[in-house]
Length: 142
Image (cartoon, rainbow, N blue to C red; front, side):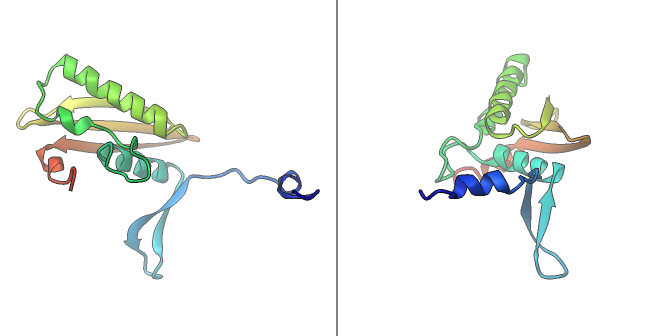
């Protein structure tokens, strides 16, 4: 590579602090895709990762979770611990931009559980709730 190549470019151009950003599958009034950034993008990313069945994403077979496998398991402490371990591993692997905590609550009137995810990013706080029940199984593997 010639003297003054890409290495020189990065030394001269000040780096901008990258704010997580993306788009939603919604069209705004101006005709553009709706943009997300910051904590909203992180929450969207977490939701997407949790709803992808591991092994189904062609370009990254490890992306996603297998939490859907716990829908019909006993609603007990052992199952809750296994779900929490799956969540911890997934968040550790795929989302290191924010502080994340969560709780798992089993449904009383049907099989499955609810995951409340609490996100903190640069002073902002957000929450997302994801229900994992038999309706999710209709989309897994299709």
